Length: 169
Image 1: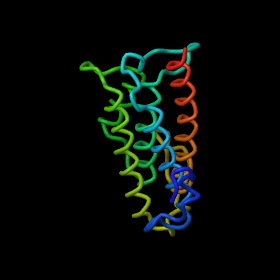
Image 2 (image 1 turned 45 degrees about the horizontal axis):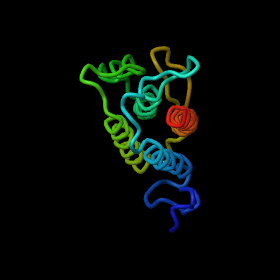
Image 3 (image 1 turned 60 degrees about the horizontal axis):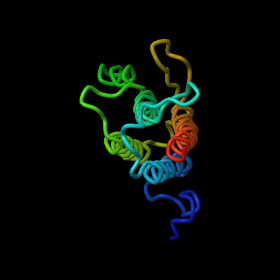
Image 4 (image 1 turned 120 degrees about the horizontal axis):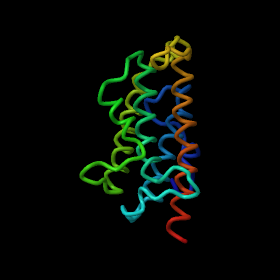
């Protein structure tokens, strides 16, 4: 298949339940676009803010973090202390300094984990109630998985614009 085709145009993904194909397609599309746009992006620009909006480093951290957190809720689990620590870190460099590749690889691994969970998700559970956050806000398995996909693509779009402006201005 031509890489000019978007992921959803390449056909169904083996082992992913039919109703979760759009989620998997969106996550794989996001991964392809992020890896392309972030290639050779200078680490010194990761934390540069434009017009008071989120920086590239935040978007990369947030993309990984949201997938992790939302998929955790979809499994009816509570967030770990590590997940809360990563949430608190979003928008800030690590003490040792992240490379662009560190943050891209974190996202790639999170997509791999999400895909594994999609494959293991029984379609009969998709309408099961899931509480979100400490308040237990109401959602469902499919609601959370769909939100993870659409939220990811929203941040990919924002990331792409921020990267383009930083690179070419």
